[in-house]
Length: 304
Image 1: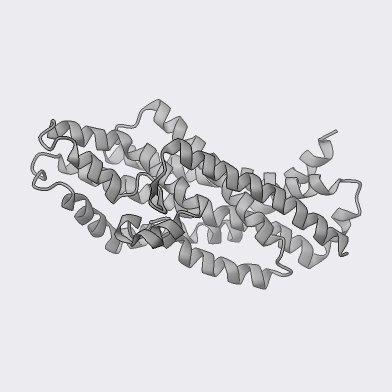
Image 2 (image 1 turned 135 degrees about the vertical axis):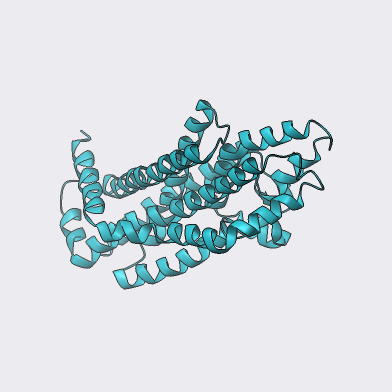
């Protein structure tokens, strides 16, 4: 009964992975984050980290400081990828509309809800494969550089967060993509998204450096919550290890300031989101967007 759905989903996945240029462009923002890190950002993050130590710099291992900052980099790269990769995967919708293929698809017996969910599923799967590969490579590189003190359960959780991020971003961009009539418009929006995405999630500058109103605005977007979650999961072990080295000399002030400075938890409208609250918020936004994309697609279909 779902064979037609699976077949169309497979078709969309293959179309994305055949377009090597699209994959490269989807990773462009992540590459920019990496280059900026090498040129400028590492010093900024190290300075932000040492400013929270309040004279404890000689106690904490310098290698742990470097590993912590490297983990911040990986979190920023993943957060950026979970914005740009799902968006690029969804451009199959615009290409089908531009070439007239969507008319042929709508003329098939495949039900409309299966069509729109197939686009959604294929994009979520494709983006997860790419982003999970980035996480795997990043963890492998960091393993050769030092110890993140990341447990097996933490690694599994990190992949789970990446999956949630890909699903939520795909759901958020789906109604937007359904409104584009040609690739020129979707590419123009992608340019804006690529430029703004790194700032929204705190990949360039920690969100704690901004005012409360800007932090609240940034945390309206699920991707910012996702970045906080992945950051918290990847860096939890190394942060605890540094805290153990301090051995209670600061009464736990360091670990508290560390989490606040690097936005381990999302903050919006005076509220701090625990991990569970962030996950529920992300899931709620994704559910609303899935319903919205089905409605938008049905109305678009009726206009034909």
